[in-house]
Image (cartoon, rainbow, N blue to C red; front, side, top):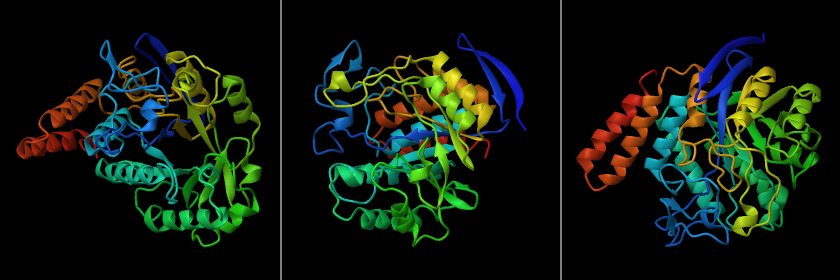
Length: 367
């Protein structure tokens, strides 16, 4: 039953929490960031695009392909210290886990690195006591010019079933492992039926909003995302789109860096800040029992809620209040302090063990 829950006053904003009383809150997480230490001496393309170089620093900010800058600096997605910091912040905010943008198993471009990073994140998710699900990118089959797209997608699905779906912290909905696709863009209708044939149980499969007709016989619903029509589009989808499973969305804005960075991509903007997050959060909470925040860390599109130099912990503070988390703002500060000390004492095993114990004491305090 939907109800009005509470009124929070925080960081100079009023956040009205309405709708479903106990939504599951997840973040969409990108695993594609690399540093010179993890990328053969060069920064990964998602920090640089064409025009930027993180080695250049102005007023304490690295020259990265974004209007925003990570509080801890540009990082490698596979770094276990970074992963613990990110997931610790999520847990302290009352976030249930991450929906991981997953490239598939085909070895082309940076897909193998992204898959490696995703698996490091999945290991960290277990370590920190959270849950996860996969968001597949079927368009990667096209970008990589895969000759047998259905065959490769089937291999990808069998990999998911053998390695992820069987984990006890994988998200299940309606007795099936939750699987989302950012599309479909390449596979359509009967293609998905063929791809899912070897899987038992069948996944609870969701397409991007307004595309469930392309998801085949096993498609159960849709998830919302960012689009140029902003609240009008979201409101229309929540009210009129009738599918069994809906995952709502909340986001702080859309500030793409593509033009500045020299990449192709969307050129529209949605104001970034607390007001946008509040509007999208309230709408999602009114209509859905599961919310995907998009995103945790897509710096190139400017949809980030992880702590940044520009906004600090603003968004995770709001989420912490809204979810009724037992943690406090001071836990965010302590987790960041532990991360920085891990880097400072990287060559001191005894200190690292103490810091690991301190991190675990925070993230598992209420388990």
